[in-house]
Length: 450
Image 1 (cartoon, rainbow, N blue to C red):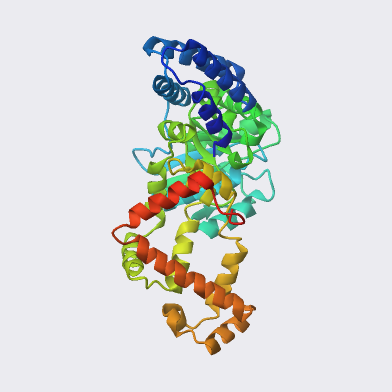
Image 2 (cartoon, one colour; image 1 turned 90 degrees about the vertical axis):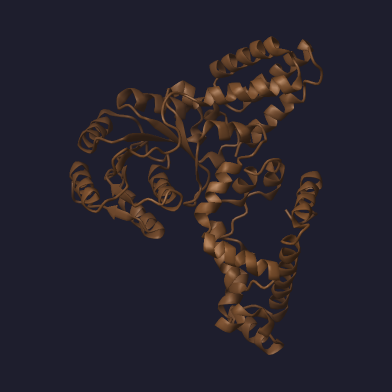
């Protein structure tokens, strides 16, 4: 997620080797300055950050450990402004949130992602309100999204936004919804008509939160438009979208301080699970290569049913999991988001994440082939792969549009995976896994396996 910035901090830290070496500190700060400016961090933010790091490092003594400690503290301070972090629920439900932003920022998609996050990770009853009637496709887009993630939608293309919001809030009170997300109007530029409509909806809904959705690809323009919205209607947080497409990433580093409100979430891809809370201490850890085990654990707990996990664990120990188990696990992993993002949360694995690229389970040709093969099996064959004789394999291959060699290859891989899983779940499994991790970090993937 922060590949460029993480590499910048790593290079700067590498410039300091000895205690009380102020020349080394100067070189580290110069390296950091160039990297941060190149990453699109605002020049005033860079100047202030470097001045604080230099002063505080000299006060406690120049050295790699002290420099790293000060750097960590100052980045965390920079990311933290007064206000709420992540998602905070109102003391009395429903928590009402206005989603604001310009057209093209990803506001409607982000509304869906936030609804998915609240439903899956926070286990809340969520309602989405389609109050953006300026863009013709916005309501239909929300219909498709809410249908996909199975959350309630209140929409009426023929009503006024204010009336839709009133109706939705009455329904939310009556049917005990926990959260109401209102997708408001967006335009290509900030104008009086847009602000007047937002003020009307704001007055009727009396929101607990007003989130401004900004496009990370626009760099410092995202900061400027967020600042204007803050001045005009008073926002309580920013959600930065399309962050996976912004290779620089510097806008996230200075946004909170520049706008004066917290950065609350970051959008990392097109799929519904690709939205992450922006919690300063966790982001600081990731920026400095320490990973984010807490977020990874939260995502995993939310995506994987505890009873199913225990049952699957017992099967793994016996090396007896079947194709039904495989499909269940694939669906669970898809809820976690992109593999690159997940690997980036594991300490020391950011370099491996970079090598993996954007592994997409949903569109993987290999996975599609395996699914076609499984769908051609009988229920008994799925539950017991050992039943698959040559005649059954031929039938499955024909049904899936494959040749028997492809079916044999998948079955062989499946058998090998079962053996390895059984081995890794044994007494020395953890040590073997650690050895594998070290090997991956040292030499990367074998040729042709990226």
